[in-house]
Image (cartoon, rainbow, N blue to C red; front, side, top):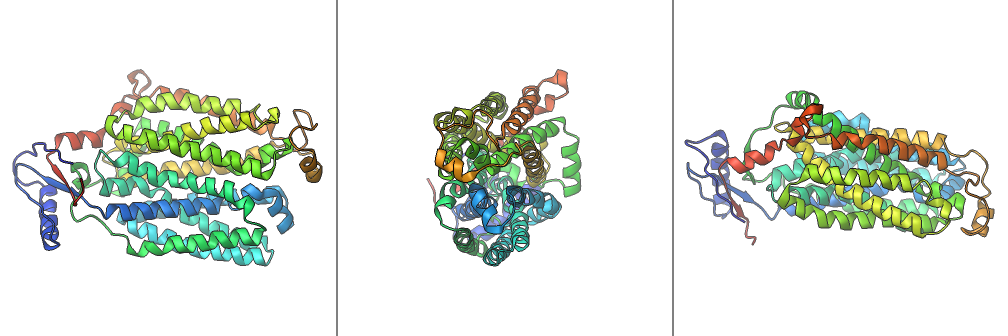
Length: 484
C-alpha cells in the first residue's frame, strides 16, 4: 500500500520525528527511507494486537453491563428485590461513565495502552466483587462491583478513534474504529443470547468473571506506540487537551453530532437493557427476548462490516449519516406496535433494521466527529460523545421504567399462557408508553443531522474533513511492515 505526495521544502517537525523513527526502525531490521522531498510513513502488523485487545475488552465490558438484564425476573427473585432495582444495575453502569470521563480523556491523551491497562484492572476487581456479592445474596456488593465495571468501560470504549489515529492510515481508520467500537454491542449480543442458558444467577456471574479475567491478561503485552507514524495527520502534533476541548465546544457541528450520537446510543442502551421487560408481558419467553436482542446486534455487526470498508474508500460520512438517521428513527416508531402482534416476526424484523442502522451509524459518526473537530485530539470528542450516550441511556432507562404499566404481573400465568393467549394490547406490566416516548424523541432528533453542511443553518463546518485534507496534501509514502 503506497501513496506519494510532495511534502514541501526542508525538514518539518514531522520529518524530524520521522528521522528519529528511522533510526529506531533500522535498529530493528526494518527498511525505512527518508528524504527532504518525501516523507515516509509505515504501518505495522503489531497494530492488530492492540486492536484485538480493544475488541476483547469492549466485548467483555458490555457483557458485564447486561449480565442481569436478559434474566431480570430471575435476578429480581434471586436478590429479593424489584425489577426496578435490577434496572439500576444497568443505570449505575451508565452513570459511572460520566464520573470517570475526565480521567479517561487525560489517560487516553497520554497513551491508549495506559487506558487499556486501567480498564483491565477495574474489570478484574469489579467482576470478582460482583461474584462475591452474588454468592452472598448481597445486592449492595453486586452494585458496587457493577459500578467498578462501569468505571472500566470508558477507558476502552472511547479508545478506538485515538488508537486508529495512532496506528492506521486514512484507508483503514473507519474499519479499525468500527471493529473496536462494535465489539461493545457484540458483547451485549452475547449476554442477551447466552446468559439465559447459563443456569442460575451465581453461575452466570462466575462464567462472565472467568471470561473477563482471561480477556484482561494480554493488556500488559500490547505495544505502546508505533515507531513511525502511519500518515501525515498522525505525525502532526495535536492541540493540548484544554485547547481541544475549547475547539470542540466552538464547533456547531460538534453539538449536532453530540446530540445525535448521544440520543441514539442512549436509546440503544436503554432498549437493550429493557428488552426482556418490553416483551415478557405479551407472553414472550426470556429465551425469545434474548434471541431478539441477538438479532438486533448480529445483523448490526454484519451491516457495519459491509459498510465500513466502503466508507474507508469513499469517506462519504455526511451522506451516510443523513440516510441512516431517518431509517433508525422510523425503526423506533415501528417498535411501538411490534410487541402487540404477539408474534416473533415483527420484533425480530424491526430489531434487525434497528441494529443495522445503529451499528452502521456508530463508527461513521465517531470518525466524522474527528474530521469536523480536527486538529483537536481524537479522544476528546469521542469520550464526550460516548459520555453523552451513557448519560442519555441512564436517563432514558429511568424515564422508561417510570412510564411502565404499574399493575402487578403474574409471571407464572404469563409463562403458561404464552404469546398467543389473552392479555389484550395493554397487558399488565406493558411498556407501551415507554416505547412511545422512545419513538417521539428519536423522531425529534432527525432534523439535526439533516441540517449539517448547510450554511444557512450555521452548520457549514459539517462539510469540513480536516484530517483527510492533511493526509491528501502533506507528503508521504506509506510502507507496510511486511504486508501486501
